[in-house]
Length: 216
Ligand code: SAH
Image (cartoon, rainbow, N blue to C red; front, side):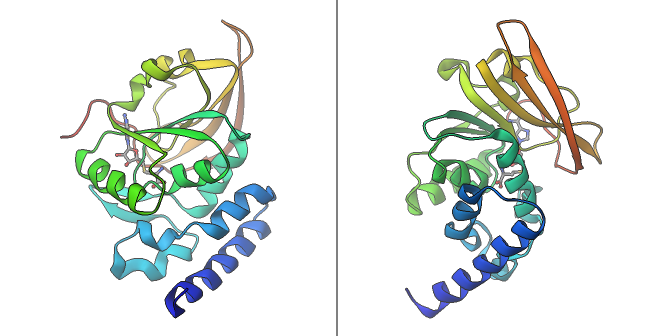
């Protein structure tokens, strides 16, 4: 490890402590965040920002979610090793690596071609080639690989896309921020049977919008 890596490791430790203080108590989540080089998901010039608890621009008008938000959504998802997980909104790829570190088999969809290409390369470079990424409209889910044990939407939706609830396994959970543009409520929808769903409502967040179609 060179001195720079050593320094980032120290910053990660502080970030983990901050998340612990904010109520994230799942050790597996904290372990993943303590391990993943978040600075590699930002432009080199902004690497310093990687371990602050803030969202950050990653190009194409998009952001890497704030670490607290990543941890919070992951907590609600209740991941077990081996879970088949669909993420909508690959963005920087960071959230996908957290899920992967927790033993999930991750499928992730991004609609912005530029981001998709950059992130696909980065994930391979960082040794996360096992995360499958797709350039698609995530509102439609990924029917070819459904059903999923867990589905995570990392962009703000106006309403819950039906394709996503349809692609949940029985007992499966969908975590999705839903609401108008500037604030969304985090919802967790559990599929109880073929046609019964339970919805729980959690804190407010502010996400970039979930948009339809792909942006080539
Ligand atoms: N999970 C990301 C956060 C990305 S921000 C991370 O860890 O960095 C949300 C992302 O959702 C943006 O990249 C945006 O382009 C993408 N997005 C918005 N609508 C989408 C859709 N319909 N399908 C796929 N991706 C979408």
